[in-house]
Image 1 (cartoon, rainbow, N blue to C red):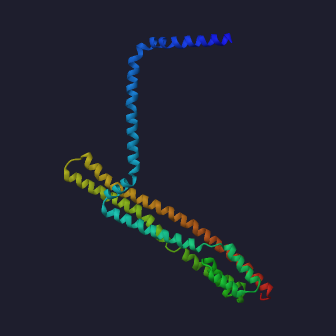
Image 2: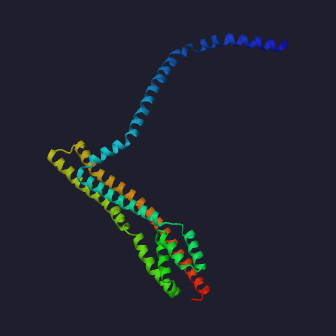
Image 3: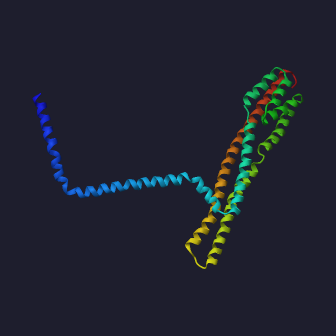
Length: 272
């Protein structure tokens, strides 16, 4: 207990004497500390101003984009905007069409197989008629020729499958056309803009950096927006291709499964 009081007494003496010693030692550096405090006080002002500028620039991104679009000129920019609208319209139309054409083929073929195993050909036709999509269409065409044998059914499925494939791929060529046209229009606008910039320099009679920069900026903006349109349409096109390939693969699998069901139907009901 005495040791504890002694330790506390020593700590108390040190706590009283230490500040005076520190003040005595740090007195030559008072001016430096004041200067540092002024710098620290000035830095938050600059650090607060920088985020404000960043927030303003990031918050007005869409406004800057619209301003740059207008600065590119009404001639080529309007054509590029029209290309983008048409390409996007075709892409959305294909997305909706392919989404509606895609059905649960396994559940559909299961119903068809159950109807054929029971000898209910008309019921199988009703199921195929009431189901949307290319798979149901080719199965329905095969059911119409079910009594003519598996070979005729197979030829009917193959021929009508080609028709359905053409319907699925419709309007995709327009999207590829717009993907190629958009950057080409941008490059053409850039070349014409550079020619106009040199005309402005010739009229001014002086190679001023302001005139050159203004003309080149307007010329290059058409290329920027043309490439942006092409990239966006290319993303949609690749998505449509992947969706189309999936539907075509399911069509082939459904055709093979249906032919097996037709063979079983003919064997069971002695019509082979």
